Length: 324
Image (cartoon, rainbow, N blue to C red; front, side, top):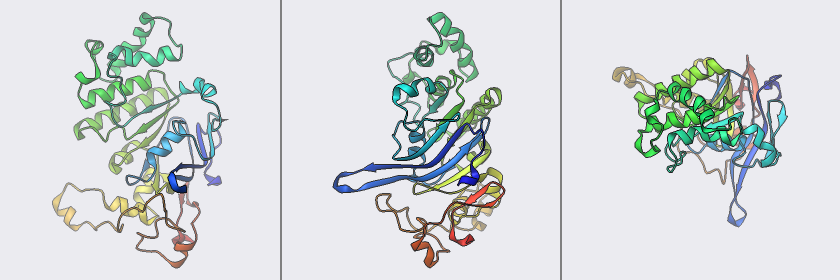
């Protein structure tokens, strides 16, 4: 997707692959040749079914998992092969919000210490008093109060715990925040509050988000661009409104057809999703186009050749033989 690269992009991912080796010589093809760019102040939403590689992609970009192949550029610097020690100064500018707001918090630490920990880790403060001057405003910004400072994570609801996790990630004022399913474990009533909190911080700081989620409606609301992943690959990527209004790939169309409708009458009239069957195993992905086993428009060439991600509109890319 060379045409899709943007000069001066904050994050530039090129041909990224991540395999997990298994016993018996088998491997999991978790991420396969993924390329995209993300600019400061913008949000790229990544959508797809469970098991399509979204979270693995996020963890590989942040180097929790080591890439098998490809390049990752952050602020113009290639970070793919940097040692963990060399990566440390960059960690301040790249933070992650995890799906499980309880598992990601240290149960033995108070809220005060959880939020202040990154400040001390990156030597941004020298004393607890100096840290408090940053922790207090951040706590209030995420909708909590000073009376929560000396409590522990188990004393909070899921929504409150996620706010604590967000405060910990944002207190460093990072340039890039990777949000890995940050709202999927929360009640619907809380999800909008968390998303609006993230949007407010982005407007204030100009940071970029890589936003991974299952909820297609929420992704549309929060994202400037949307990338659709299937079995480890990006099959379509473009401006959010264009993806939702004029989807090109059969998989993208099927995902959009599966969005629930609250109105019972409209729901009955709505077309059933055109996606057939279950997602194949990433250990033995199909040859050619990986989606051909479930595609209602498959052709002979789909079983033999993998379609490249081609530009088919204004910053709209799609990998499908229908457009050959």
